[in-house]
Amino acid sequence: MSEHQPVEGKIFTLPFMFLGVLAAIGLYFLGVRFIDGMGAVANINSGYPWGIWVVYDVVVGTALACGGYALAFVIYVLNKGKYHPLIRPAILASLFGYALGGFGAFFDMGRYWQFYNIAMPSNWNFNSVMLEVGLCVITYIFVLFIEFAPTVLETIGAKKALRWLNKVLFFFIALGVLLPTMHQSSLGSLLIIMGAKVHPLWQSLQWLPLMALLSALTMGFSIVIFEASFSAVGFNRRPETPLLARLSKAIIWLISVFLIVRLTELVLRDKLGFVFAGDLAGNMFLLELALFVFPLLVMLFRGRRDNARLLLLAAVSLLFGGALYRFNAFLITYDPGPGYSYFPSVPEIMVTVGIVAIEIMAYLVFVKKLPVLHSAEHA
Picture 1 (tube, rainbow, N blue to C red):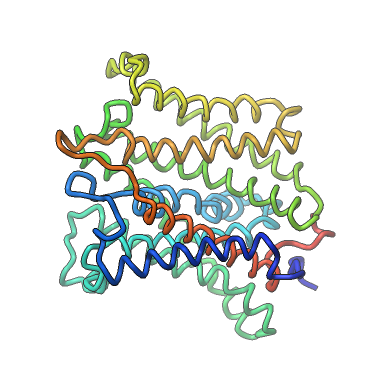
Picture 2: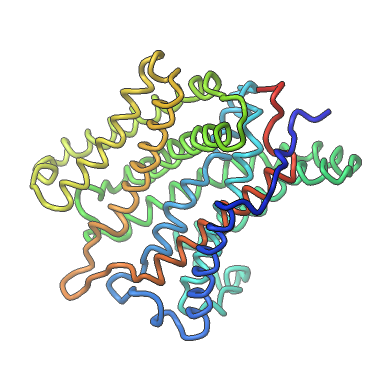
């Protein structure tokens, strides 16, 4: 008997139908975007070519989808098999997050019909960081499909195919660790290229790839805690707090290194004055710092991290902190020069909300119909 079981239960619940309404609104505005063009729905311009579609769906969304990456590193590289019960839901969430992030990059393209060029090596610019990010994300989506395939094969009883896949799965697991390491660090490299348009508090130059990778890993571990906690409440399952509390020890190290590097860079480059300037950038930095420090203060002490509610609050704080770090760098404090401004339009916001709604709906269907969550006796 598999250690994973479908949750079962009704699909069309009231929350599910509410999400369906949000998804329908988002799809409507997405249809307008493809029929009437980008300008009909988005406020992006020459100074702000990336609005929330790229910054949230790709830059932030892929970091939120790093649960599968973070757990694969712990389970298969550090050989911590005790966390294996958490891997399937993490892989599923990563698959949806990255697939919808890739879709977000597609509909954000002005000339989306030229998308096929990324599959043509003769048209590649090998000096482009964007190319490396694009290829890695596309390949990683394929890898996530393969990593999740055992769940589907197990459901349909394809035992022979499952045995064959298990023999080669190690190769895809290795790719599943390598590819996010490459493209998440490269998202930091994009900020280096943006130069002085990025505020000094976030323009850390050669440290940016490391910062981007550390923030992705902390968000990946945090989303695992968030998913497991909400699955326990939403599906009336046994809480997994002891396992999640042990997992949070990895986050302590990641936050500590992140904050040490971040603050040391500010001191060495004499940027502390920007922190206390009292302007938008300084205030956003202090808010971001608080969102990182709070989970550290919770997870450092056993009594606090063994508390399910505090642990969930710490994970949520860290998710907001990591997201704000990326929003601040790429959008909120981004300065393309005089004459430009940007605030997302209602259709832009609703497209993003609709995509998130679709992701949650798909996740609910999969966990209810496929053996994604581990059975209670293995909790």
